[in-house]
Amino acid sequence: METSSPILRVGVVGYGHLGKYLVDRLLKDGPGLGLTLGFVWNRNSDKLKGLVPAEAILEDLSFFANRRCNVIVEVCHPQIVREFGVHFLSQSHFMVGSPSALSDFDLNQKLRQASMQHGRTLYVPSGALWGGQDIQRMNDSGTLKALFIRMSKHPSCFRLKSDVLADWEEGEGRRVLFRGSVAELCPLAPNNVNTMAAAAMAAGTLGFTGVQGEIVSDTELRDYHIVEVEVTGSDGFSVHTVRRNPARLGAVTGSATYQSFWNSLLICKGHGGRVYLC
Ligand SMILES: NC(=O)c1ccc[n+]([C@@H]2O[C@H](COP(=O)([O-])OP(=O)(O)OC[C@H]3O[C@@H](n4cnc5c(N)ncnc54)[C@H](O)[C@@H]3O)[C@@H](O)[C@H]2O)c1
Image (tube, rainbow, N blue to C red; front, side, top):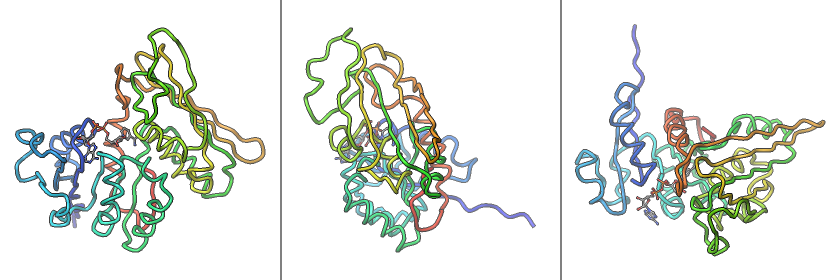
């Protein structure tokens, strides 16, 4: 007897660069892959008119549960994770596109608890992180000793909550902006360090305070961002990866990250009440 997989209904929260990309892919490729668009919410719904089928537009996010989605994807702002994350997990699996929000210890704990309590998965997309699953495996087997991530970008690609880059000039070269724990970096550069936050989730035993990061401004990097990951294990084991992520000048998100988010979404079919790097 032939069995068909159930259709996965996806709710998309946020309609900026990533949200629009995911919605377009859902409308174009979703039906062939067993995915359907359950709703799209944006704080200004006028932006959706003519671009999203009228029946998919959700005007008020507090009514998200009526749309009965299997998975909800946040590609919006850490504030929405704070306000709605626990509610989303009470109804659906939840893919958190702004994992820098999870540097808040209380929120992190609340989301983990909600996930366990409701048996729904808190998905963290790997984004521009290379080797996240390997890091998670080392973490789970107790062999992960240290983790360091450096993200280097053209200064126009940073959105910082400080004026440390206010005086940058074309041609100035390389400048280390900040080095410290991912817990310290997330509030400083919430839009730029989601990859580090994903790594801190994968490396749960080190956590946001144990994983170290560095952000570097480099005017030479006009066409791509660089993400370096240094993993230290036991008995002298180490891995160092260097990822070049093509990106336009001024772009916060590298272009390969869009496809990476789509691939992550395809994994969100339910992995029980736990955090899952996808
Ligand atoms: N996990 C990763 O690797 C990764 C990569 C890129 C971006 N991100 C994160 O994903 C999110 C979306 O990224 P993007 O490139 O699409 O951003 P974007 O700026 O293009 O879009 C963000 C959308 O959210 C809306 N928005 C902003 N602040 C809001 C608020 N406080 N309340 C409600 N709506 C708000 C904006 O109007 C916009 O529609 C951001 O938080 C970004 O930091 C994560």
